[in-house]
Structure formats: C-alpha cells, structure tokens
Length: 332
Length: 258
Ligand SMILES: Nc1ncnc2c1ncn2[C@@H]1O[C@H](COP(=O)(O)OP(=O)(O)OP(=O)(O)O)[C@@H](O)[C@H]1O
Ligand SMILES: [Mg+2]
Image (cartoon, rainbow over all chains, first blue to last red; front, top):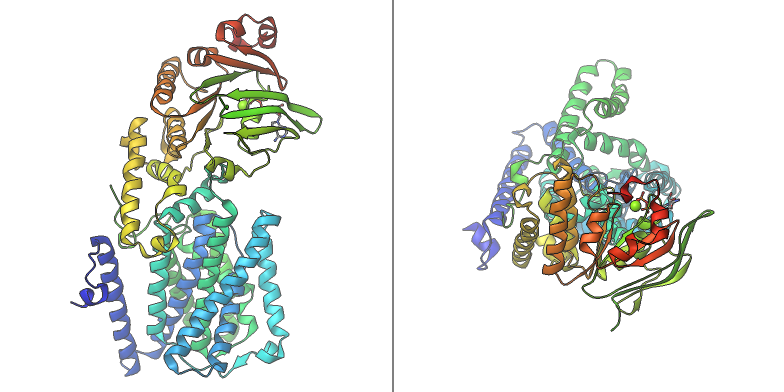
C-alpha cells in the first residue's frame, strides 16, 4: 500500500522494489530507534554512536568512489567535510529559515559548495598536473583548515558556535539511505564500469574512447559533495565546529575505516566503519581509567592501517558485495 | 574514392632515435592490410601515432577526409578507430561480460540522471547492452566465460576478449597489434579464420601487425614492411617476400623463415 503510494501507478521492476522496501524498512527501524532514544528507552550514548557511524559511512563510502572504484588516492576528504560543515552551518545560522527548509538548504548547500570546490580543484589537477592527486588533496586539506582558522567571521581557531540543532540519528539515516541509493545506482551503471575500467587500465580505457579527465572529475565531485553533506550533518548535530576537527587526523580516520572494510565494495564501507567504531569505543572504555592512555587510541588507528596493508590488502570484504546491495543483473 | 585512413609523411622520434620516419599509408574501406618488420622496427609506434597515444613530430593523419592529427586518444577512438594491444590490456578485475559492456559507453541510450535513478529506460537500455555484448562474446566463443574475471582467462581467450571489446565499439578501423603473439600453430590457424570471418561479417577495415609471416600472407592482399622506422617495401605477399631489402631486414631473424 505504502509502496504504491510512493511509486504511483508506473510499473516498477522487482529489483527497484526490493531496494525501496529495504530502505523503507531501514528508515522505519531508524525512526523507531530514534523514538526509543527520545523517550529514554535506549541509552543516548548508543544513539550517539549510531549517529556518528551513519555520518562516517557517508564519508567512507563517498571516498570509496575515488580510492576504491576509480583507483585514485585522495587524501583530503576531511577538507571537503570541513567546507560542507562551515557552509552548512552558515546557511543554518544566517538564513533564518524554519526547521525543514533550513535543514534541507544547509545540507544541499553544503553538498553543492563542496562539490563546486572539488570540481575546480579536479579540473586543474587532472588537466594539468596529472598523477599528483594525493599531494594536491593533502595540501588542500591543510590549506583549507588554515584558511578557516584565519577567518574571524566564523570564529577562527576557536570554532563556530550557536549552530541550530537540526540533525539526529533519524535524519542521518535518511541521508545515508540517499547516499547509498546514489552510489549504488551509479556504481552499477555505465559510470561504474567506466570508473573501474580507468582503475584497471587507464590506457585501454582511454583508447576505448573514455574521456578520462571528465570521468575522474565526476567521481571527485560526487565524492566531495557527499563529504560536504556529512560535514553539514555533523555541524548541525554537534552545534559547534572547529577547524581542527577537519584536519588530516580526520582524513586518516576515514582512510583507515575505508581500507579496513575494503576498497571497491560498498558493503566494505559499512563494515569498516562499524568494526572500527566499535573497536575504538571498546578501547576507550578499557582505557578510561587513565586519561593519558585514552590518547593511545590515536596511535592504534594508524597501526590498524599498517596491519591491514601488510596482511589483508583488500580489507574485510575484499571486492565482494553483500547480496542486498547489488541490483539484479539485467539480461543475465 | 576517398581513402578511409591516410597517413602522410609521418615522423616520430624518441630522443635521437627515429622510431618512425616519413611513413605513408593509405587504407581503403573494407581493406585488410598487414604491416610486418623485425623487432623494434616501429610497427607499434605507427599504431600509437594513429590512435593519438603519441603526437607525430611532422606529417598528417586523416580519417575519412578529416584531419585527426594531434587529437586526443579518446576523441580519435570515438571517431571509429579501435585497437588491441601487443601486451594485452584488459580490465582484469572486471568480468568478461563487463569488459565488453563497457565498450558501449558512447551509446548507452541513457544519461546521468537515468543512471542515478535506475529509471525504466535505464533498465531497458542495460538489458539491450547486456544482450548485444553477449552476442559479441558469443561471436568470439566467449559467452560461456562471461561471468569470469578477465584476468582469469587463459592467454588465447584474453586476446579474443580484446577483439570482442574492440568490435563492440563498432569501429570503422580495427587495429590488431600482433594478435598471434604467443599462440601455438593450431591457435594461429584458428585466429586467421577468425580475422577472416570478422572481415567478412563487419563493415570495417583492418590493419594488422605481425611478426609471423603466415598470418599476414594469408590474410592481406597488400603488405607493408618496415625496418628502422622506414617503409622498405609494399606490395602483394609474394612481391614482398622476394624483395631483397626485406630478406636483408629479416636476415638472422628466424621469423623470416617461418
Ligand atoms: N615511448 C617510447 N620512448 C622511447 N623509445 C620508444 C618508445 N616507444 C618505442 N620506442 C622505440 O621505438 C622503436 C620502435 O618501437 P616499436 O615498439 O614501434 O617497435 P615494434 O616494431 O612494434 O617492435 P616489436 O616487434 O618488438 O613489437 C624501438 O627502438 C623502441 O625502443
Ligand atoms: Mg610492437
């Protein structure tokens, strides 16, 4: 019944219907969890962990498009998250909109601003510099943090306060569902085939007529847009942001979760975030008795990365994909 | 009649080495032509010049009357030139089927938004691409292998997959760079039959590089011989084989006898 209402009269294939059902189920569960949290039935701590996981999955899965499917190595994802966080926060603070429009425009605006910045950087990088995306994005990440620190208007190094709270676990779940629909649909289309072909053999891909710069920049722009979306969610969830939370430490954390789960697998991005977050939380609780030990976690994170690289290069998932993420194959 | 591909006085040097010098070629519609020459003669460089991988130092290349000199490789490819590679370049981690589906990228029949929404027309077109690409695989005897990763195919099948992928772009010209390399005599025999069949079934011209004489002599009416980047002979197989310059070029190379 509900499905009919959403889809309308148009006939829709079984595969799409399955995906819509799955997402509907996920969102209803998320709403339920949120409600139980609101009435105090579920500990706020757990709701918080779930919310952070949701935002991190958006970050990791979008970086996966670049580092996994396209086979590039980008090191500035937190920078785009930062751009999104600040632009989203400013929209939320200064436009004076009621709740829903405010939420919508601060999320969409953040995604667009991050996307446009990435598009311009990508155009310059892929066109003129060539194979230096890692260095360029790393430099970009440092520069953007520095720039924000020097803008008094947004609080400089002290950070930006007074952002209205518009985000909770449920809103993050809606954005996550949206992110996965977009990423999955693109990955399982001509675009996904072209991105992977570039990763597998750039010269062959080019000689098959693929406009490499265009395809690379498309992935870069989309990835950055979702990082911006996650940043805006973060800003409106925390109500306070400061530049330091978007520096290379955050980028490293995103990378660790990505490589832990496995590049080139959307399932891996979920698994990587969940396993990493739970591990870190357990460690936090274990080490809590000594505040100095808690900082040890920051050493453990890069160590996880090294261990993955040495022992299981393709992460927990390899390039495999859970069944429910794959659309049914056309014409099989 | 206007020739399909015209190469005029093309030269390409790497440092002091003239890999190709003052090279000429005219390829007519539906023609199949061979290029032979000893190791390092400049054969692959000719393909790289045609496909835009390298820019010529001088000279011009025309496709169907249009000057394509200096264009980007992807632009040239979309104008109808497809090739295979001497060292196989497949998309290893993609399935055999996806390797060929990928070749439909310039005529998918849906746009970005269609892909984003997996719209009805997207599904219809993907079905068509799946079906048509399977026909190419079937044509090359690879349909059974469609769901395997390309990197897991044996060598001979990888070479055929490269041809399938190239054909799927519906090219006007197919460039084959040593398609028989590393094959045993039986496989070479099959390959000759296959290229003959492709030539009959598809409206395209073929330019074929090979080391092994039998392949080119059986397939091509006209053969070019290159040595040290220069065209030293052009003619029918028997003319070329009896040319003293050619014999000299191949002297000491066992392929000459084969
Ligand atoms: N990118 C390059 N940089 C420098 N030298 C090159 C380059 N490409 C080719 N050459 C040189 O140009 C010459 C011609 O090479 P090419 O690959 O065209 O020969 P070939 O006829 O295809 O030989 P083979 O039969 O071994 O494939 C060789 O001496 C080679 O070393
Ligand atoms: Mg060669």
